[in-house]
Amino acid sequence: MYIARILYPVKVLGPGNRIAIWMAGCEHQCKGCSNPELWFQEEKQSISLNEIRSVIHALCNNYTVDGFTLTGGDPFFQPNALRELLPYLFTINKDILVYTGYQYEELKDRYEDIFKYITVLIDGKYKESENHGAVLIGSDNQQILYLDSSAKSKYQAYLRQTTSKIQNFDTSDGIISVGIHLPGFEQRLKSKAKDKGLKEHL
Ligand code: SF4
Image (cartoon, rainbow, N blue to C red; front, side, top):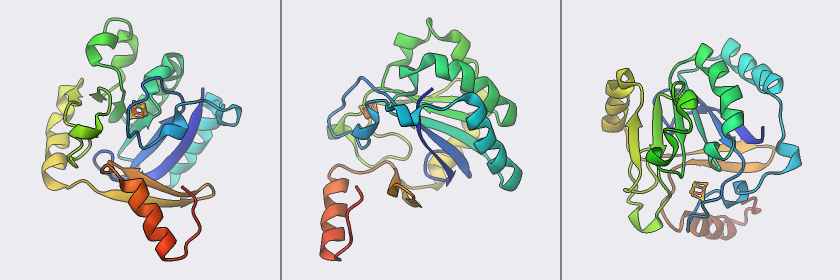
């Protein structure tokens, strides 16, 4: 499977301190996508389930993990990777939030075996003109679907209690900015960094 990055603790893509996994590959080409570098898969992103297990085990042994968020790219660009990964994640924590640019209706009959491991699905392409800074969703057309209805109250409380926030991680690949960014975010950040004489990693 092709995984671009794994970060912890991500607090802005679901309730609690989560392990977020960015899967590489996406065919939607949404205008204004904040991760166009993840549309394509690179050999260096190829990773086995065993390698992922050791990363996740190390995190879970040392920190509290409240859930997982899978984003990208589009996780459903790699359905077989989801078939491998999700049952394993599910044994650790059943709160699994997955983003996809497809509509649930398009996927549900084909991937019933995958959906039984997904707690919350956020579906639909990103539409820049409908990005109004909502929590969790990139644009108003996207739906939050509670595939496991028992998670609904937890997520609804999270949605009520928080505002859309950005978290920056200092990684070996430079600063990774996580969260739902408003349109023009990258240009504003680059211009601020330039004003302050900072080197550009974006
Ligand atoms: S589905 Fe997500 S990753 Fe893919 S192009 Fe749209 S916004 Fe970008």
